[in-house]
Image 1 (cartoon, rainbow, N blue to C red):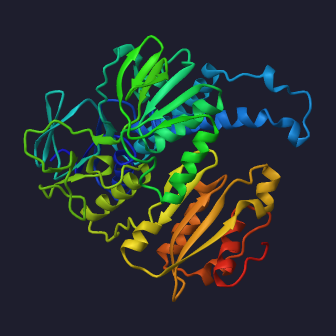
Image 2 (image 1 turned 90 degrees about the vertical axis):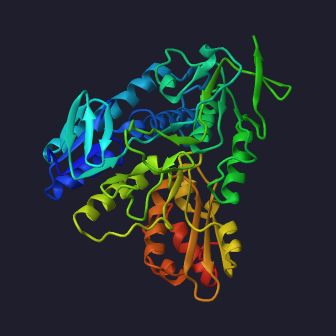
Image 3 (image 1 turned 30 degrees about the horizontal axis):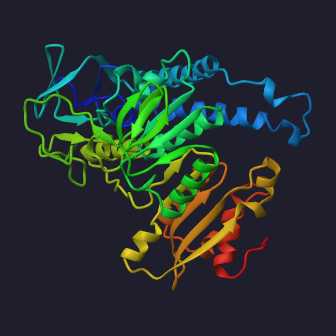
Length: 447
């Protein structure tokens, strides 16, 4: 055998698997036809969050006078798309170089090219046969193809967005997931006309209805048009037609739900609903071939992909490292940020669990007042009899960072009493955890 492990794809699943394999003494190689870091680093998670951060600063500068800063006139500042993209690419390049360095440091070979699965232990790359007793498929996912009756030049994929020289003044984003909502907010914050169109009944279906309802109201308050249970049926020179409604737009961005990117294979690999079917250890119908990350469709999230990579590498080395998806954080890098972990209200109701909801508003938090961002709440869902924390939802600046505290509490099967015992620094936004803990037991301290 040429290697101990062959990995097809260098995204958050693939490159993490390579690093971990090297750390455990395995001879590993990664086959990648594109850029290190995959969709997440190059076109998804990182670039979109960088743009959102630029838009947030742009929005905040317009309120400089509220913070005691004179001489900045909102009408004289403008958003420079080219400079924002330059900053984004600089961040991506730095992270990509970091991955390259880590792979080299851990003795992982990088093979440029397209991998074709020839057998349970062989991959062909540019007519070269490479063998290993274990193969990881980590080729990721992409938005489903959008077949619309509009000119091709109107259509954008996420990669195309970052290649634009000039942003459109009006845009329709097709989709109802986190990326669609985040990009709607980005365009709205920099003053563009933006509409969201989806054939689904709601936005952000993976989130608790409390969060998805809040997100929809927030989008509408920012001037975003939302057209649900709607599809694009045509176009004219002014925009697109959506079930007889006319929506002005220069471009249409595809942000639909995702589907697996499947590598070419000469052997039949079992699939389910368009994704590769796996067992609890992420093995396919061939015990030597694993499918990790978005390709298996369990949860199309970068941090889940990396967790699966660690589990799979540990498994082939005989190391026990159970995968636990029940506390997986779901983050929205929106304005304000939203995050959840654990069970939602509909899930608790379906399971017929007796639960209690405790809420603490961000408007009573000192740090939020200091930052001028008091819109938000922490919701703590606990088991009624013993007080075990079953779910947490946060709407607040830094919610995507704070949710890790909730994950840790739930993974340790912590209770509302444990939440109330954790000492938090003051003033911090995370004090809302402490307040919610006390509120769940008896009464909040500052409400």
